[in-house]
Amino acid sequence: MPSVANLVLASLLAFQGANAAVSVDKFVKRQKAIALQGVLDNIGPDGVKVRGAGRGLVIASPSKSNPDYFFTWTRDAALTFQTLIDDFLFGNKGLQPHIEDYIYSQAVLQTVSSPSGTLLPHGLGLGEPKYGANGTRYNGNWGRPQRDGPALRAVALIKYSNHLISKGERGRVKTEIWPIIANDLSYVGQYWNASGFDLWEEVYGSSFFTTQIQYRSLVEGATLAKALGLPCKACGQASNVLCLLQSYWNGKFFTANFIAGDFRGGVDANTVLGPISSFDPKAPCDSPTLQPCHPRVLANFKVFVDTFRHTALYPINEGILSNTGIALGRYPEDTYFGGNPWYLITLGSAELLYDAVHQWTRSGEITIDATSLGFFRDIYPLASVGTLRSRHPAYQAITARVRNYADSFVAVAQKYTPENGMLAEQFLKAAPFTPISAANLTWSFASFVSMAHRRDGRLPASWVPTRGRDKPQVPAVCKAGSVVGTYAPALAAGAPNVTIPCISTVRFALNASTYYGENLYLTGDSVTLGNGNLDRAYPLLSSNYTSERPLWWADVPVEQPGGSGATVLTYKYARRQDCGQGWIVEKEARTVEVPACRVDGGEAVVAEVDDEFIGDGGTPGGC
Ligand SMILES: *[C@@H]1O[C@H](CO)[C@@H](O)[C@H](O)[C@H]1NC(C)=O
Ligand SMILES: *[C@@H]1O[C@H](CO)[C@@H](O)[C@H](O)[C@H]1NC(C)=O
Ligand SMILES: *[C@@H]1O[C@H](CO)[C@@H](O)[C@H](O)[C@H]1NC(C)=O
Ligand SMILES: *[C@@H]1O[C@H](CO)[C@@H](O)[C@H](O)[C@H]1NC(C)=O
Ligand SMILES: *[C@@H]1O[C@H](CO)[C@@H](O)[C@H](O)[C@H]1NC(C)=O
Ligand SMILES: *[C@@H]1O[C@H](CO)[C@@H](O)[C@H](O)[C@H]1NC(C)=O
Image 1: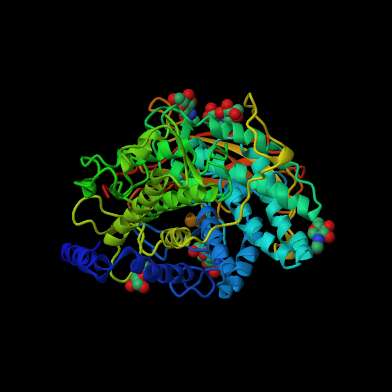
Image 2: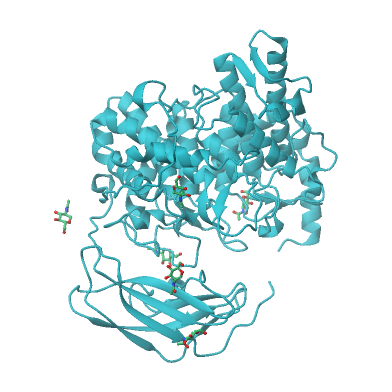
């Protein structure tokens, strides 16, 4: 924990450092270079802040405690490489070796078995959000699966593939990179309509951000497949996904998640980050792909931003006018590290506005409708419903003011960026407004670089088809859907030749009363249960836990050595306490007979146990 004196000192730096004194132009120029280096410092094998990280793996942050982010996340890594690939395409040739390493690392990660499952036969392992810094399986209790990762990775790899094709390297794309992309597209096509955890890894359901990037991946995947002369069965799901995407609109804003229970209002940065990840500078504003300049996206932006103008929620925004940018966080109910503004969200909001200006500039007009009127009135009080052409003074005033509005969000990030340019995850919403949570967060740095590209007029390639049958069309009636995918290790890119594991699924059900923050695991002498190493124990789920029935459970795919007859699995239950007070492990081992495994990929439960925890309960650590 930093001392109070350090916090005060840091806050003085934040307010009186050179950053606060320079113009936004100068700040962006200087900080973009710092941010790009900040990203590279966190990528293995040579990143100076992440010694021990595997080749091509993006570590979320060098922070190893409070919080421990010394892992690689599929989402953060893909978003980071989307931006690095952009920077490469804008002329930074030195990034190419990193991009090649990324391709290799992802081919390997796809084959790592995890609590989400394995690549073969059903692709389930692709939904795993997080791996060790060297690419090893992570067994901790976590919000899984997360279904945005494969889509984001496909979009990153497609971007680079399109470049290679333009350089005449079609053959290489086909044999090396397409097999990775094809696995990810298969996953999207098969599971887009199944519940998963959102990008904040907290709620289980359907999530706007995930659906929007899934749609993009299927459309771009179809275009690439066509260029390679290959089929993409999964891509046929695109119009169903587009239909689901529209249904998040509730008349006023996009409800960020469809989740059971209504403990959240649905206002969430998820719906601002989605449109910038799907930005196509040439797409029309009324495109159902929900571009930054779409009336609903602008209306949603206003609802989102206004939520954080309440100074009871965010004292940091006190006294700022409604035409000026503020500090923004994930969602108003957030309590993680106290629920503060995030750099990447404040910067992402600026990016959304720059994107919208580019789209108006390209089309030469701005259409204001009843939905978007409120957004426009904040920055141009005389705005009225209608279409403004580029010569109209109001058009010129609005584009200039929206750009200034975007700059004012950057200025907020600038104000709270310490002198050395290091971007943490969050900064405090109340005095002293200093950085908090993970230091040197890769995603914060990457979001800065991406924002700077758009601010400087560096735009990504177009991806929305404009003609013919490929043009996005929302079906009249939304349909559920799924196509069974085909999965194979991407051998030519360096993946190991994994085969369908020999698995018997056992259902473990355990009665164990726990306090909030305490978790239960299975430990034992088998690969699946972590070979007795508690750090790799298998997590149980509390999803069906009630006070009447304190149930912890999991359907565990037990990997069987050798592969043939029935075996006896030895196990114990272990409680992991909340603040590092140590594990409580059962004293006596238990056993269960596991029937012969199946190699057909069948995941049906073949054995069940019903147990009660034997031993002491835990004590809350109060951390
Ligand atoms: C973040 O970067 C700064 C500057 O390089 C360094 O002093 C600090 O130790 C880093 N913190 C972590 C957790 O990496
Ligand atoms: C990979 O990382 C894990 C977790 O940090 C560690 O236990 C393991 O020893 C590492 N393996 C290698 C090969 O470095
Ligand atoms: C599946 O799709 C249907 C049709 O769009 C939708 O009503 C339903 O909420 C979706 N479920 C999930 C979990 O995506
Ligand atoms: C991969 O493993 C399978 C099954 O063991 C085998 O048939 C195949 O030849 C192997 N492929 C390569 C390239 O080694
Ligand atoms: C827990 O709830 C899920 C969803 O209702 C159900 O499918 C599963 O069988 C339950 N697990 C146990 C062990 O009862
Ligand atoms: C677990 O609790 C439930 C409900 O209280 C009970 O029916 C069941 O018998 C218990 N199981 C064991 C093994 O104690």
